[in-house]
Length: 223
Image 1 (cartoon, rainbow, N blue to C red):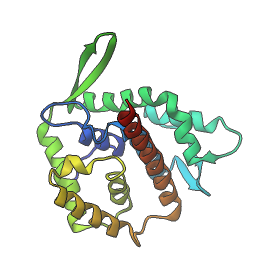
Image 2 (cartoon, one colour; image 1 turned 45 degrees about the vertical axis):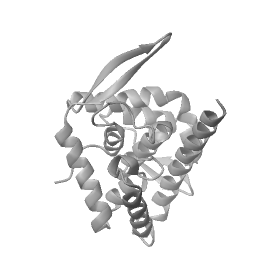
Image 3 (cartoon, rainbow, N blue to C red; image 1 turned 180 degrees about the vertical axis):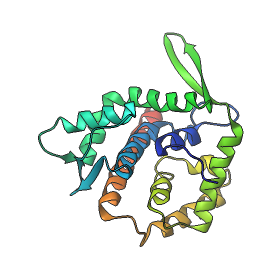
Image 4 (cartoon, rainbow, N blue to C red; image 1 turned 135 degrees about the vertical axis):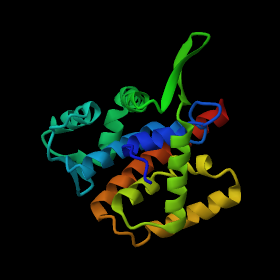
C-alpha cells in the first residue's frame, strides 16, 4: 500500500536516520533543495503551475496549503515567468521556513518529533522518527518501485530525487546494492513517460541539489 504523504514530506521523512535521529549525512547538504524541487512537483501535479520553456507559469494561487500558498504568491508577483533554476535560487533565504513547514506536516501526523539541541552558542532542532512502521513501509514501497519499475508520472518523479538527494544510502547499506539500484533507476528514466516540461523541472532541482552537495564536500575538505 502506498504511503499517503505529500512528495516533499516523503523525501524529508526518508532522510531521517531511523535509530539515531537527525538527517543522514549523505542527504544533509542537498535535502533543502530536493524538498523545494519536490514542492514544485506537488504544485504541478495539482495543476497550480505548469512548466514552459524551463520556466514556471503560475496557473492558480488558491490553496488551503499554507506552504503551497507561500510559494505560489511569491512566484505570481513577477511580471513574467522565471526559470525554474532561478526560482530555486530565489527561495534560498526561505529554505529554513520551508523546511519548518515540511517538518510541521510530519509532526502533525505524529510521524516525527523534534528535539532542541545546542552546542556552545549554536542551537538547532533535531528530528527523530516516532512511527518506525510508517518509515519502513515507505522504504519498502520505494525499493519495490526500483525493483519492479513503474510508468506512473508521480512515482517516477519521486524516484528521480533519490540519487541527487543521497537517499539511496538510506535504502541500501551495501555498496553493491546501491550500485544496482542506481543502474535500475537510470534505466527507468530512459524513455519514461514523464513530459519534457516536467523533466526540465526535475533536472533543474537535481542540478541545484548536486551543486549544493559538491559545495559542501569542498568546504569540508578544506576546513
